[in-house]
Image 1 (cartoon, helix red, strand yellow):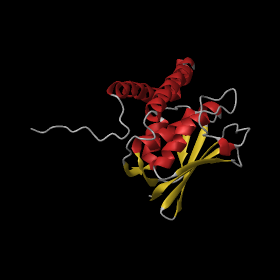
Image 2 (cartoon, helix red, strand yellow):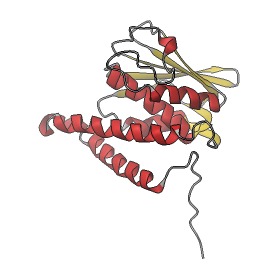
Image 3 (tube, helix red, strand yellow):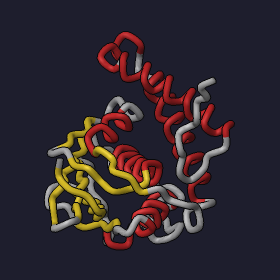
Image 4 (tube, one colour):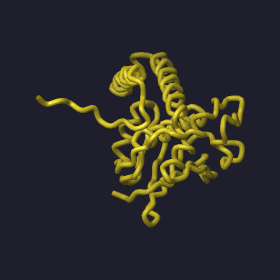
Length: 212
């Protein structure tokens, strides 16, 4: 008889957490379907949705951080545009644009964790409404610039991602960006931050890959 073999899941997640995340994703897909009728439903639903996304991301970060330094990573070719379209449903009020598609050598869950934290940071702390993801080829590597139209960062952006550092009174715990930098490094790449000439700050993710 044929037996279904579960897909390989890097950075193992407990079954209970997977069930919770699946339920949250269903809620988020429903939210995306109703984003054009928010005036009819009122804004409270979207405020509640933000809390759901925040709690889900905190859970995800805690689970990944517990094994980020020693957990096994599975590097594979991942389509950038498809991955971002899958994640964008978490922020129905944030428009995410991908300038050009690319294929990245990365761990699926680690890459998603990095992008989730960057989008959440832009939306919540930067109060951005638009994010632009622009990949550029650099030899055998990719440089992915992620910028937004948020209100900017008052300090030195190169210090973002330092372990558990809160840069303002409105900042979160600091886990998200620190974890993102750690995961990028473990995949043989780098996550850095620079001043954005428009608003800012701009995240720069360097990983192995090529333009599609």
